[in-house]
Structure formats: structure tokens, C-alpha cells
Amino acid sequence: MQFGIFSVSDVTTDPTTGHTPNDTERVRAMMTIAQHADQAGLEVFATGEHHNPPFVASSPTTMLGYLAGTTKNITLSTATTLITTNDPVKIAEDYAMLQVLADGRMDLMMGRGNTGPVYPWFGQDIRQGVNLAIENYALLRRLWTEDVVDWDGKFRTPLQGFTATPRPLDGVPPFVWHGSIRTPEIAEQAAFYGDGFLHNNIFWPIDHTKKMVSFYRKRFEHYGHGKADQAIVGLGGQFFARKNSQDAWNEFRPYFDNAPVYGHGPSMEDFTRETPLTVGSPQQIIDRYATMREHVGDYQRQLFLIDHAGLPVKTVLEQIDILAEEIVPALREINEAARPAHVPSNPPSHADRVAQVAEAGKSQGQHVAGQDHWTGRRAEDDVATAAAGAAQRGAAFGL
Image (cartoon, rainbow, N blue to C red; front, side, top):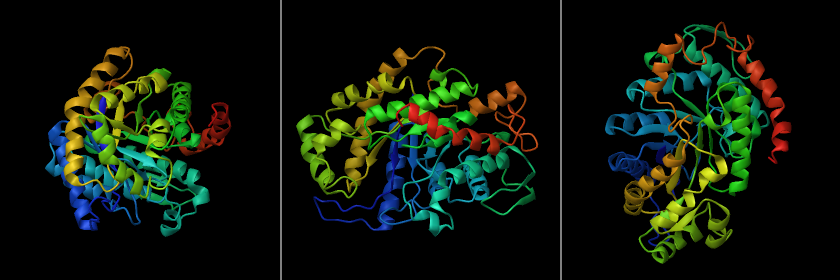
């Protein structure tokens, strides 16, 4: 099982000192945090994508490309790549370049984002968010799997004889996750393609997360990618730990109470009860997160948000060490001891995917003349049809 951290790249005042980092400080802090996570032995660092204050991560591939050259082992990923407002041609080229620079040590997560104004900023209509996600991703897959693409759709100009460069490393595209908190159409899209699904449940009760993951798993099996329990699932999470539980509560409380994302809402007591945020000793974090598989089944990736709310870099690095040295070993042992042999421990790596291609003789999910390999029709048409019914099917799950 993979464990790592993700950052939303917020610029937040430290309520205990009054210091507000400038954008340059915050970007450099993220680099320090990612490099420390690599040195500590964590397996994933992921960055969000935002194009507005108070966030600074507007160019994930620039950031991850730098980290590809300054880290050794950690998988570099995105917590969101905006599939709705980025041009899929640019995504295809940027992430193939990152894949080459990182020597395959990367993947990415597609999402629609949670900032409504980003749509008009990039010339799109938020009312078309789901349709944009479907069409853009279908084109992206073709750009990665076909050397020459002829294409026309609703949301961008047609392509004639277009080749995206560079080509994916070893001819195998990066592994893709789809992230959604509440949209069954996106879970349906992930299941349709046999991709991963990450529910970033940091603000949500576990019963909702359970419903979304269960929906994705059932649809994954419906589309013939394997048994439901073999679907590739990731979760978000949050914690703040100190050796003594009360010390953790006392230290974190001013950050919780004053951060824009938390402050002036539910109390920290209520929030930790209703969401995955866990404040306490390392053992309390272990005990809380060891129960996640009871709700969502055996899963492959757990990401924690610990770089937020104005916490100083020194504190974040201490949290990484606690995570890597005390929490992760215990959680990995608990989760792997219970995992059935037929259920994957990790998401597929680049080497895994290359081996699959070698065995199958063609790229997994490869398209021929723009047609989906199991229906003989255009993939975007099929997934759009599937997504059209996803909301109705999701309602049956209480979504």
C-alpha cells in the first residue's frame, strides 16, 4: 500500500506568529516538504492545481519536473489536474514530458476542481463541467495511445493529423486517477476506463465516502476490468500528531480555529468526529486510519494533507517524520495482513504497465481508429452514455 502527502498550496497566516509567507516562500516550502518526504521514505507527493489566491500551485508540471530532478524514489503526482479547463493537447504533452523527466516515477489525478470562477477564466462554462471532463479525457487518451490523431468534438477546435510530443515513455501512458468528492459521473468515468478512483474525503463523513467508492467498484466490475475488490482506490486524509495527545490538540487548535478552510465553522471536536481529521498521538492516528478498509475495502493509496492552515515548515517536516517512522509502518502491516492475495497492494507502476503491454502485445486501453476496444464505438460516446445514467444509478447508492 502506498502512503504519501498532498498539498493544496494554500498561503495562510500563521496565527501564532502573525507571519504570512509570500508566494515565493510558499513555493520553496513545498519543494522542501516534498524533498523531505522522499528522504523520509514516503511513497507519494501530490500537488493540487489552482489559479487563484490564496493558492500558488498553478503549474503542477513545472513543480513536479523540478522535483523529478531533486528526489530519488518518491512518486510524483497531482492531487488535481484540471481536465475541464486545461486543453487536453497541453495535458498530453506536459505530462508525457514529466513522465520522461521522472523516468516513469509519476502519475496524475484528473478532476474538475472546486473553484467555480476558473471556468470563465479559461473560456469554459461551468454548466458543461461533466461533459468537458468526458470529452477532454477521451481525447487525452487518444493523444497518448495513437501516434496520429484526427478528431473533432464540441469543446475545442478539430485536430487533423496531429501528433502529441514527446510520446509517452516506453510507449505507455501514465497511470490516471479520477478524483471526485460527490459526482457519480466521474466515478463512472474512472470505472469505464479501468482507471483509479481517489475520494478526497477530507471534509466528508465516512458513510458518504463508502457510498462513492462502492459505486465505483461495482461499475469497475460491470465494465469487465476485474472484480469489484480489485479496483484501484485511494483516499485523502488529515492528521496532526504529537507524542502526547493533549499536546497535539493544544498545538493544532489555533491553526484549526483561524485557517480560512476551517475557522469559524464547526468546532475542532465536531470536525474530527465527522471527518477523517485526527488530532492526537501516533497510536490514535493509526487506530483511526486502520478502520478505513472496513468502510471502503482494501485500497491502494492513502494521502494525507499535513501542509496547510499556516503550519510552519519545521512543524510540517516533524509531521512527515512521525508519519514515516511511526504511523505508516503500523498501518501498512495492518492493511497488508488483511489484504486478499488477488487484490493489488499498490497502484500499477510504470514498470507494471510496461510489463502488461509486453504480455498483451499492445498498450492497455489502446484505441484503434478512435474506437473503444471493447465496444467498437467511439469511447467518448460510450462514456457519455454511461455517465448520463450515472446520476440515476448513484441515487440508488444514496449519492
